[in-house]
Amino acid sequence: MSGRRGVGRGRAAGRAGLIALGGVLALGPGRASAQPPGAGYEDLVRLFDDWRVFQRPVLVDGVPDYTAEAMAARHAGLVDYRRRLAAIDPRGWRIPERVDYQLVRAEMNGLDFDHRVLRPWARNPAFYVMVFPSPTDVPAREGPHVDGVIELWSYELPLTPDRSAELVERLGTIPPLLDQARQNLTEDARDLWIAGIGSMREQSATLADLADRAGESDAPLAAAARRARETTNAFIAWLEREAPTRNGPSGIGAGHYTWVLQNVHLVPYTWEEEVAMVRRELVRAHATLRLEEHRNRDLPPLDPIGDSAEYDRRFGAAVDEYMAFLEEEEVVSIRPYLELALRARIGRFVPADGPREFFAEIDYREPLLMRAHGYHWFDLARMDEEPQPSPIRREPLLYNIFDGRAEGLATGMEEMMMHAGLLDDRPRARELVYVLLAQRAARALAALRMHAGELSLDEAVAFTSEWTPRGWLREDGETGRWEQHLYLQQPGYGTSYVVGKIEIEKLLAERARQLGADFTLRGFMDEVDEAGLIPVSLIRWELTGEADEVERMTSGGSPR
Image 1 (tube, rainbow, N blue to C red):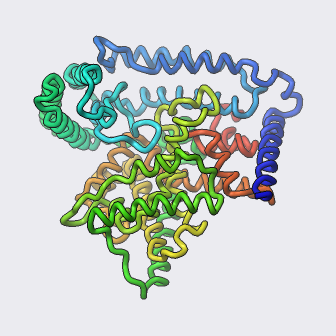
Image 2 (cartoon, rainbow, N blue to C red):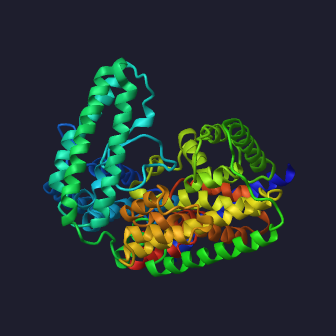
Image 3 (cartoon, rainbow, N blue to C red):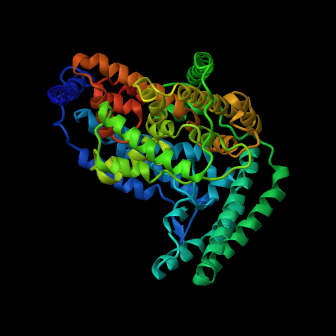
């Protein structure tokens, strides 16, 4: 007990000192007094509030306007917001406030990149998918989507009259939106076009299910779902008719990939560097898996869970064991809502006649391992339950800028917790850690090569399947294709799991070296959590005072 108190005092004092020291070092001689700490920060917050309103598309009769004229006007309007941001001088601010400045800058770069390069409203049919039946495990829906998507899972049937009327109204925007999409989708990106047909078919199936569930008990809702489905099916037929005319590339090229990494996601690497990093992780995962398998060669294999009773027992026990491990081993400060968040995601047993999808092959063999990946649910619960570090971090960052921190830490926790002792009495489960890492590295490398024009989407799916051990990522399954389609739509996301993990590991090593005897794992995890779901390069700056990575990614070489 006394040791934990001493470490807590050391960590708090060390972090405060480093922030102060980092501010002086980053400012240079004589700059600390140029502007009082915090002066002008309120102007940044006001700009951010205005920006968040501006970046949303204009509504016409309740439907977001993505026509060429509207998008050109929005891109032109960005000039004024960038001018306002450039007029704010943050160099005398505290480091956390300067971090917020970089977050606003990154979001503006994200909108600019959308207009100059991605242009999802003009080249990506899946952009217009509006209905999602299940929640995402990150702060905002992955990939580019129209404004105001319908998170159908948040509507629990039977609905109250008010909620039903609300959902009917929102479903009513789908027909005019898809009519608009036919006019907007003018650019040639074959893989995005073909994969988008599949995404629209999923929306059709979701709407059919909604109409069935609403039935006679909610006739207006059932009718609205059927109308939306009819329009979706007609849109699918149009996409299929147009498909033969779409033969152009869907990737953005290595140069644009580097730009979006460094200027939007604030990842301090190039396309080439990420290729080298994920290749190294891919071969490391395969080699280490073989060593683990050799060590365990006389042990029985892990059999998957076979029925609902075993599922409920083992998944419930996994949550108990994992939460106890985190507390007893002083990994992270425990709050009551963390266990509730993890337990709410246990799910239920799903029978299968043949092979399951990749992550179920893992989860049904060792539920404890994926509870570690469930740090996602801790993140979301913490956003709901705890005050956020600043007004600019109170909402999810746009353009999936959170991906390196959210996906990187969740992925990193699998191997980190194994090394911390979580799987000491489960040697066969250690093998699964490297199966997971191999799959993440393979899909990251496939995504990088896909954007460079070296692989088509089909080839990327085949590559990832081939390089995932044990045949668990089937080329004809749903997981591999869904993932590569997402990574094609959102450059930077496919590598965020592995590169984000590496960034977290690098930060852990730097912080441990910096704090010396005062370093604790729980102290490190807590201060990472306290920084919020922001790029790891900015968390590093905030925790260590080191601004070199941000300097390299900022125009003019100064982390304004």
